[in-house]
Image (tube, rainbow, N blue to C red; front, side, top):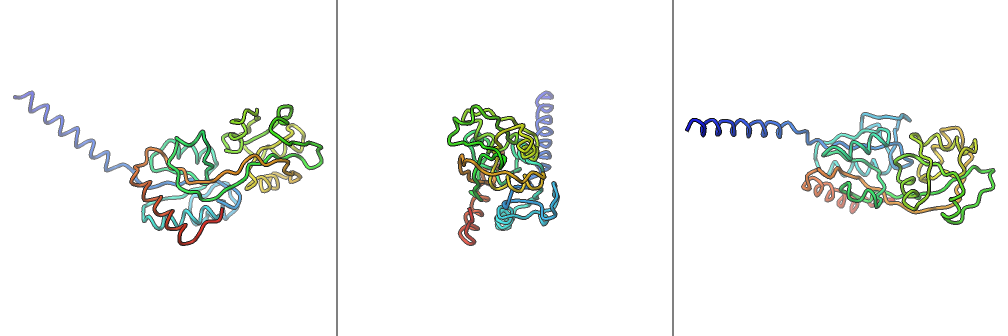
Length: 244
């Protein structure tokens, strides 16, 4: 009898502990983004932003309207792409936008959208006589890309070797110094990146694909929350339309 009482006491303590932890779980939705062309960017021209009001862009504004519809608690921050993507990948209630929905990412997230689209293109230095008519032409060329970026991933998935850099701004400089022959990037951001890096003399030589952009939510986020987000997205798009 004493052993039974002790067991029941232990069980009550365990359940109390679990309930206490559950109550402490932060269910605030945390959305991360990056500087990416017209879709999302710092209104102050900065690399990082802690406040939503300092983040602009067509996708960012759509997300603001969508979250207002949900009435769910949330925060939006602008970070480097690698940080934003990793936090969405690893933590429940976290999401990242504007994210290309690729085959390799499909099962990693819940997808809300689309919220935009961009073209993956190949760029060269303007004064270089380089012709690219197909991906086969890349086999004898040095191709540079941004590590973890969908444009780079798209090319690698097609069997092309890509020299990856942790910072994309390095690639227009490498083009200028002829350390690479081709740079793979999104047309949403390539010109801005090249201009800001001080090497604006680039031009596209080929379009690889068009990618639709989404809000990607961590797969451990409760499906009830995902359904609320999707319903809010549907309502906002129906009311305001969507510029892809």
